[in-house]
Length: 169
Image (cartoon, rainbow, N blue to C red; front, side, top):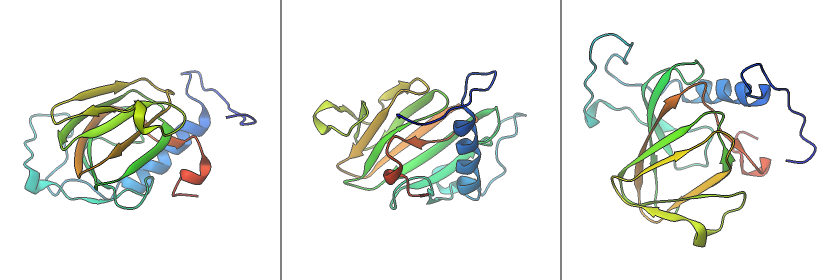
């Protein structure tokens, strides 16, 4: 990202990424469980019918999100699910924290890289896991509807390598 000015915090995250994480939260926050979200005390049991899905403002149209636990803007654990339609492409992007993905249904094609190259993607069938480190460029795509579960520790956000790929622009 030539020419981009970056200010690093004492934790090593650039200020732009932290602001992006807050923006993602503001977009995704309305989509939480109908049941009481997990607050760190006791147990929370969630069935698929408890989940409320809504659009993801930080992704291309068609993706849906449900937040199971956590506040994406805070330094705390989160769990969310994404439902991606068939023939969906997630443009090259990075995240400010580790991303841990479990494929719940379908086959998710995922790869490390700064440009979409479908031949470099790994097919991750149901039950597969992928773990990506902060700041590593990645992209993904589907051929069928896919549901993935992401969990990690916030603050969370997404920054597209090409600003034209960002639906918030």
